Length: 173
Image (cartoon, rainbow, N blue to C red; front, side, top):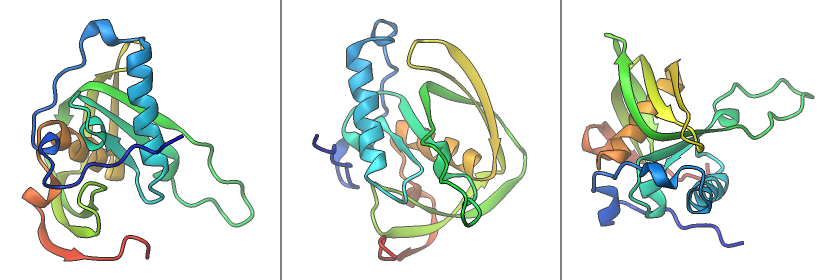
């Protein structure tokens, strides 16, 4: 099975405002294929914690979060966390904290570039799952940062557009 390529800065799809997923695509093989391709691409990036559909060249408002990768490392001798993926379709950030924090950030579509971003400390998202069921999820820390970063992708914004102190680092370190 071929791993979908992650689009890189400079490719037009990353700067487009992604389209809402039409209701008739919920629960279809087409949606399952998109989600499968996204999960496969994310799985291939050991440091990746989330991915938006435009990052595999699909201009729909979808992102995935690898919850197992945002958990603290298991204690020595304990098994790794099982793969756990959150699916967010047509997400909207509905609530944020007043407080913003400065965080380190990187992106699979801007490989090897990192910087500091100001993000809300907490964020709540309302979205749909693969079957079209609406849900709400709030989060703080890294999860709140992911919600904001991935929503930026769906709006054609990359973190480098507002990050400071950009620097290069080998992503295999």
